[in-house]
Image 1 (cartoon, helix red, strand yellow):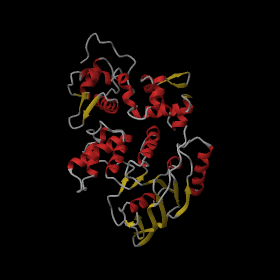
Image 2: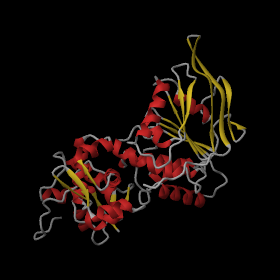
Image 3: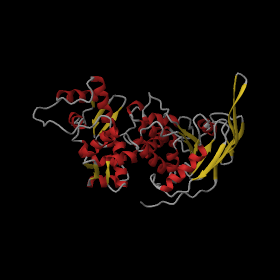
Image 4: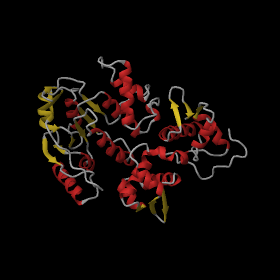
Length: 260
Length: 169
């Protein structure tokens, strides 16, 4: 197996500074996130993990501009995120495809707000994104006729078609069977961390530590709620990563020790 | 419709729950382990349930990608080529797929470029006793899933979800 050098990590693409979130239940404060800070650089895949219900997905939604934090800021290339925006896109655990639209129509739906593109340009972009995710020929197939892995490919194609700089992925492989997830992980990493796409950084929420060590350049471990950053692990393993190697398990143990 | 005189397809029937991506994973992992591995190790490497893995192995063997003997799985020459291919892997299996049911019957029915439905394929196969499920509606749905997953990846047929029809390419 040839070793590919780890990515060259350059400038900061996204920075999360002192994010806190408090919900109120019958006027009682329920702190969810407490002073969470992290950064992701160019060509990095950063994984966020932590105990169930600690607020990992909520943090991702704040980064996407879908949920407002009580305090703190999220910046993409020094511009503050105050709501959903075109350069940040999200891939969801349960695909979130419109069942009454075909694969192509689902990808086109992601481009519907792009007033800078003609209908023809949108169609070209959507077809290209489907091709890149291995779905050429599946343009006219409905989500209900696709397997879980293929649905997630449509989800990724829809996200890619918008030419995002930041891609946020919320447990993207957890709904898939092991055999499907194994292959999709490798493909998605090759596809996203690649100069031919617009994506500059990927942030992925996952509870699967082995998946994190396989894919990520850095792992951010959150604590129990109210979640704060319990630790940050820079995963400096050459790619492709051998999941059965002793070295791999050392990294797995390192992340587990921060989780426990 | 089944034509009298056409040889009965006895063994080449695609398992209903196996998808192309699973076969690709199996071949890639076997290749990564030196092209020869025993089934328990393979299940462990893939993190797959052995019952699921056996169906995938059957499909991979039917497609000529692997051979299994006494619990050991080997990649064939085609399997090695398939493992090394970087894109459109399933297209390499076009001819093999065309000899496996339900693809064979679907291709026959659509031989003159006639669009066909999964229901027509199910009826035709039922006539010769090939079914994946005893309930007709579930059988048809399973055949449709198999056709969508394998014939499009294999470059054998196109499918239009709006009409529910497949067409030979």
